[in-house]
Length: 225
Ligand SMILES: [Zn+2]
View 1 (tube, rainbow, N blue to C red):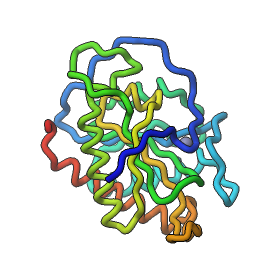
View 2 (cartoon, rainbow, N blue to C red):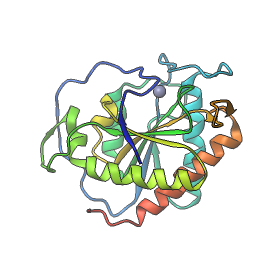
View 3 (tube, rainbow, N blue to C red):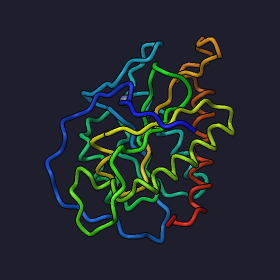
């Protein structure tokens, strides 16, 4: 497991939100997963080799993952169900209102290989009633790292190449749930040749199945480290 510090390859990020007060999500008896299909509407994100906009690829991944989780009885909240524009604050607001136990922000990229997992680069902070909105994730970073670990294990078990990293993302940094940005990149052979593009249905299904399995595994873990 190797943690690197870099920005998401697609990195189409809006301006930082204004400071606001937000209390961390209260523990919930229900297990809720938030799926955040990145980009959308006027923000196309990157472009895949086949010409598809990233915003369409992230929505397809979200739909697939939602279907897999719902079939296993998991409550899923999505930040968008269509090609709509959403700023990072709105995404975090939806996630925080849902009081979710898992938040996955979904990206798709032509850069790199396999699946990139990013946890907020904020330093872990003690949970308190009031944290600044733009750094609310600080209280959850330890749980987010545990979530990334579960995702990493499941993806590797499925034979997918995984890169772990820390980054600062306006939406993710404001989420009061264990949160990981998942970026699906092409599957590549040892020599770098692309063996499956991120919009390949079988490849996407394989990655979604591994992500869903990890969420189910994470649900069984104790809430506090
Ligand atoms: Zn993106």
